[in-house]
Length: 245
Image (cartoon, rainbow, N blue to C red; front, side, top):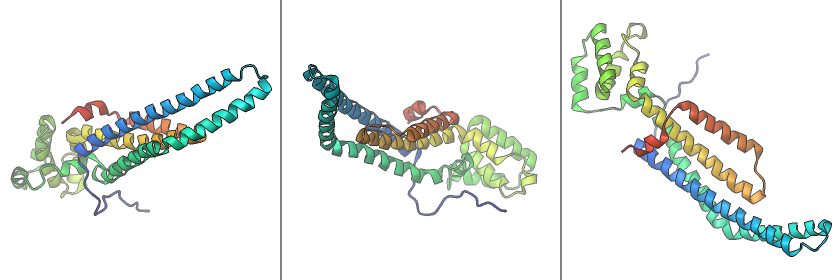
């Protein structure tokens, strides 16, 4: 049975690599501020418990436990109400950023998709296409090696356009291999950036729910761990990616 190819849809907004760098930075900053907020709130609740326990120290333990729990529960409910807007703002921000990178997915499906956009419409790319229009397999393979070794993306894009018109069995080099050599590292960076923003949004929502309920979800904790492992498997250095201009 034939499978449907993963192709971009028409009409979604464009998201640049620069946009993705900013998205990762925003997501990290938002998550760090949320963690500090929740740590502060949990610290206040813990402090309240200590204070109540000390004030009721002379009451028998069987009675004291219930009194402490009721007092802390009341205080926790107050803290939850007072912090609701601030906590919701962090969850919404994380969701907004995740929505942005979700649109980016279709524009970065593969290295070859990224490469064919390089220099699109430029005079140099058009000139290269004209020059290689009647080039044979040996010359095309040699030029592909040159483009890969010099990092010439425009030449690579022109070569991919040329060989894609050939029968697969007659192509003197793999367009996918050339694309990976020229933009594979950037594609891995972009992929990891999208994955991190999505995972950060999940963690933000999970953290807020855990504070609301007073307990973390083991399932969501495992899910976040799996997402982190999958990000690591991509092999990108997002810190370096963010620092690039």
